[in-house]
Image (cartoon, rainbow, N blue to C red):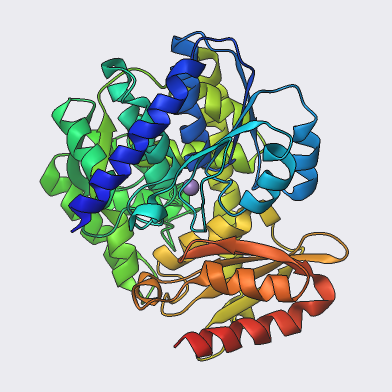
Length: 466
Ligand SMILES: [Mn+2]
């Protein structure tokens, strides 16, 4: 069934290619706006590599979904074509009002849900329009890749970036990838761009094991992450040298290490942890990006660069610039340390997590870094630190009068038809804020004094949906 949808999507990608071709001569001014997360950075990278090859000048900016005031400003800038990656669908109305009305051309390559319609000046590609699920079947990077690879065979290796985007958006299921993502991975393996194998999905597979375990955040190993002595004890207890590296262990030893880790970890909720600890490892076999060859680790590094305010470092590394390598890897290490502090903070304050029959939530005020919140929730859930049986919301102070809510929902919630993105969108609009996202991950910004109302309304809406 999905095959027909994929075919329709591919046909629409052909139309975007026809739109692009006459615009690759370098005689128009192009502005790319993309998201700051790994998917946004990878999507921007794929398009940038294509433009660089054809000598097409462009500017690229990284940011969240554009607000009306941003678009109003953009409209006055001297560009002919505005490209929106990993955003734009949810902002279509204001894009129409400010950019299309002013006769600018707009291209939206996105995978967020929403209405799209055709109108002069607008070209778009979004998996939701073809019955595909944008939360799982393809990321923004995969959408951009689907277009770019049709230009020329030489762009095939960019499937590596498409996969980085999909992993960044956590689109991999315990049974692997689905939809367009699945096709991209299969083709990439066939082309020798990637190899896959089963193993420990830990970052920094080429650093000494004690370091690798005590720095692990995806997943977070409660009792090992942040505790070098405990990690050393485990490694030495297995008869391994502390300098041994994961990449060089044979399969049996790696399985033994997995079992030791699972024995040691101080969490009761082991199913999620098992899934995030052991599974398919994707290794790049081409030299185009600088930095880790393990794609999960690459995602963590891009996350790190984003959270530490160095998006351009991650972007340059992905673009293959040697001089970005050290800075990007330093960011990764510093980010791991900060995330470990964040998760330990959450793990030791579980009594602050409130629960209703339909959701859990925690107000952290200013005690946690707002940039770390969303990712920290994902990590806490997939590492078995907070039970992943209902949506989880973290509330952080954004400013004196604004609050940011980050939400994560379990897969089962989405499979039963729940959509946390829709819930947050509806409630935040009701409370004179804004918000939205995917069925399993979303965010909202609301007036601070309406926190109680927010919780009540989200809870109510979740009940109605059931
Ligand atoms: Mn995305």
